[in-house]
Length: 328
Image 1 (cartoon, rainbow, N blue to C red):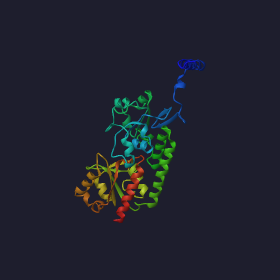
Image 2: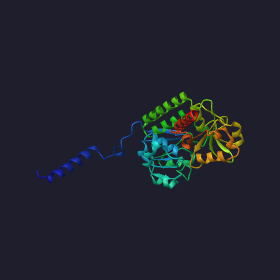
Image 3: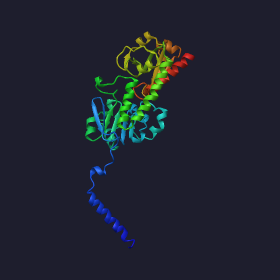
């Protein structure tokens, strides 16, 4: 038999086998189903059913981005947007591998151009019509979504801020991406840090004013947000713990009356720690505060004062700086 006849026979055999097997179906051509899928992810009254782990996700807001990076999902991100400050050094390399779609929110058209299969945001504003788009609209396009339970537009749906609820969000995102074991690792590592901070209790006996922003009045860390969680973690007393919400507007007269032992400055791109420090030292009344006179001031990145994977970093940094003050 000639060599030229062999391919013809092989082709005929293949056609015969195909005829015996029947025409290929969509199910046969599809990728094998991912183990554990489909899964539902629910927050803020919205549920997305995911048939497979996302491969082209977009994160909106720094908190969402850093949760994804903490879970090692940078290779599943089609893009990211909207930082409050610099990403944590441990995430920098992974972050640099992801396309930044916009300095703030990208437009709906920009988001759709990336052909995402999942969009994850920290704040309800991420899902406005002029940003990623409404969650219901994205669902109609086959795009799954998840809004941080801390960012729900309805106050009744919001999660109570705490390390446990942060870890709940991490677990939900890990479930969506099919990597639940990575969330277990994040929680275990952070729980160990929280336990150590409680034992150290660097803030025990200290009254603290958490200065977020403002000059005419002060936007202070109140009793139900990230600042309160951080101060509780280090054993300090928040002078405005009695105020509702995560942050609250207070008068400078209230700050002067409290005369805190320590002031924490949140460092954000729109209100830097340096600007707030300068304001405290320049004002003829505020510069008489004991904490200002004695330079008992610590700083923490804004992203380490909001619910997310860096909240424990904020607690660690406040603890370290309080220990330095105690030793000075």
